[in-house]
Structure formats: structure tokens, C-alpha cells
Image (cartoon, rainbow over all chains, first blue to last red; front, side, top):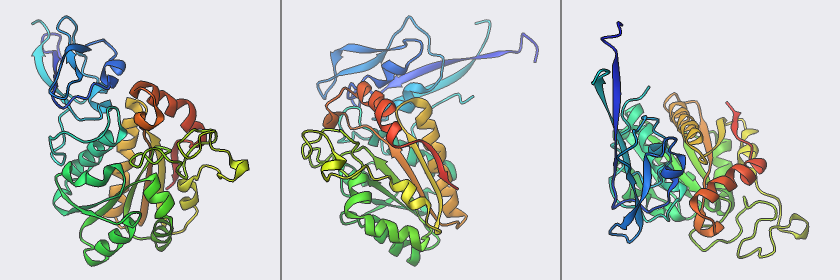
Amino acid sequence: MSVKEQKTFCFQVKVNRDKCKGCQLCIFYCPVGYLVLSSRLNKKGVKFAETKKDNECIGCGFCYLICPDACIEIHGKEQDKEK
Amino acid sequence: MKKSFLLPKSLKNVDTHYCSGCGHGILHRLVAQAIDELNIREKTIGIAPVGCAVIAYNYWDFDVSEAAHGRALAVATGIKRCRPQNVVFTYQGDGDLASIGIAETLHSANRGENLTCIFVNNACYGMTGGQMAPTTLRGQKTITTPLGRDPESGDGWPLKLSEVLSVLDGVCFVARSSMSNPQGVKETYQYIKRAFINQIEKKGFSLVEVLSSCPTIWQKTPIDALRWIEDEMVKEFPLGVIKE
């Protein structure tokens, strides 16, 4: 594969905030600090995990693996490296 | 490398009643993921235990039956013998599998029933308020051992059921893993998948013991509870494949 054809991935983390119970395990295991604890409350009355806009997800899947409430999904999308 | 991480179809997208940081939620997802990957959702029958996971049928999107306390493997034996074409598994905690139901567990394993058994070990009775379980660690404080479990004073030693079952001839696969970090979760998934494959290939009884956290009863934060598994529980319950 030539350099021009190389593809890179961007990852979008979706947190279902109303299912989140605020255990913070995803925040603890995120290697790049992409997930943080929100200052707002969800319908359960707990502070939920949310994504930080100024960092980039590397798609390791640690948050998905460790989340006890299955409220995290990671969508990987292919994009050109130059973009 | 996996590009997307999506929820398995066998898991309903609903709120669970589990406490914050409880390991049951992770394990429910792993079981659903293994069933989806092996494409056996339409022929799987799960047996829910008595304990915190008693209403697991509200969270899984395949057939699940309930059993009396500790009798999940007896019910599973009946279902599997009547319907050998189905994949039958039990999901049990330490109080259910290793205490009140130990007779059913030992005899199902000894008969070599073609079943998959998933054993959640959190070293206490979670649902009833934190009494001592057979798997409670030495020195661990529970509401029935307020000074810590003391084998010398008659409390007994932690029951290593996986090692006990591994010596039986009817048992084909025994493994122990922990869900204390993402790597452990991945390992647990591989063991669960192997246990299901063993049943599909009619190899016999498979047991996967999973060390799981109970932050509420242990009175720790979810993160400290996972550290406690790594620091204390793993010393008493060594990880890895015990028999295959």
C-alpha cells in the first residue's frame, strides 16, 4: 500500500448517559484521558461519564470492555490520512 | 485491530439493577457477546441463579429459565437431556454454586453433563447483605465474621471449587480469570467462548470461574474494589486454565 492510499481511523465514543451509574472505571482505564466525569447529573441523579472534545480517542476499547453497565459504544470510521 | 465496539444483540439495551461498578454487568455482556459470535442465540437456554443475578432474564435476549437456590445445574441437566440440540448454560454466584448447591454442582460435574457453567466469585453473599461465603478470603471482614474469617476458629478456608472440580473425570475444561482490568475481561471472554465451543463439540462439563467485584459489600469504591481483586483475591485464587 502506497503512502497516499494509507487510511487512518477516527473513533467516536457514544456514552448512554442515562444508563451510566458513575462508577468511573472507564475514566480510570482510558489511556488518553478522553473520558471525563460530567458536572451534570443524569436521570438517576449521578454524575455520568462524557467525552472530552479536545482529546482524541485511539480506539483501544478499554472503556467498552470495563463498563459494567454496557453504556459505551465505539464507532470506528475510516478516513484519509491527509484529512 | 477491531474498528468498532458495539453492544451484542443478545443483550437488551435496558438499565440493570446492579450497583455501580458491579462485575455482573460486564459478565452479562461477555456471555451475550460469545453467544452472538458463535451464532447460537436461537438455540441457547440460560439458567439464572438465586442471588444478585436472579433477574438476568430481563437483560439477556434469549431463552432463560430460573432455578431454585443452588439447583441451576440440576435444572440445566434436565433441560439438556430433554433437548440435547440446545446449548444450555448456568450462570451462578459463589453462594449458589459453592454453598447451597454444591451437591448439584459436584454431581453434575462428576456425571460429565454436557453443560457450560459460569461461576461468579465475589467472595461474599452480595444480595443478602454481605455474609461470609465459602469463598470468603482469610481475614476478610463480613457481617457474620466481624473480626475477619479465621480458619483456626472454625470458619474454614476459602473453597477452591475450580481446583476441586478439575480432578473429576467428567470435567473437560476448568479456567479461572478475573475482571479486574480490560485484559482480564478479554481473557474471560476467551474462556467463556471456549466453554461454549466445548459444549457444541460434546466434550463434557466446562466451568469458568470469574473473580468479580462487589464494591457495595466490600465497602470500597469501584476502582479500589478492582485493585483489591488484583492484590488480595488473585493470591488466594490463582488465575489461568486449570484443566483442559
